[in-house]
Length: 122
Image (cartoon, rainbow, N blue to C red):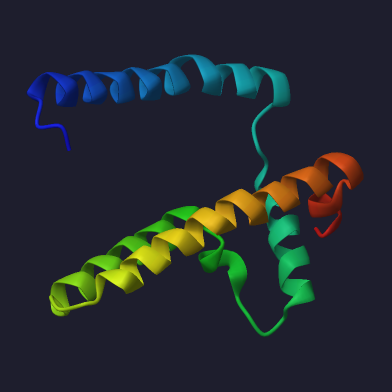
């Protein structure tokens, strides 16, 4: 965006240092405080979700990596295959996600902190 190699490399270095901090400091601290996550607890969470919506297998869909990858690939294919794709639709897409993050996640986090709403679903 700003056509500066210095800024690019500074940004890449900042991201690298953030990832190193996560791996070397945060993860060991979390494991020391909370212990290793057990596969049994994760399976219970997935079973609870599947119990509420039995017609859908949520285990693959709930994995954030697959969801993010699917959105990225679909967006890339859509824009590559349709060069005349209207920009207004892309802007609407961005606006939708911003509104979701502002209002949807704010709502979920507020009710979770006040009434334990989100965790009570599972």
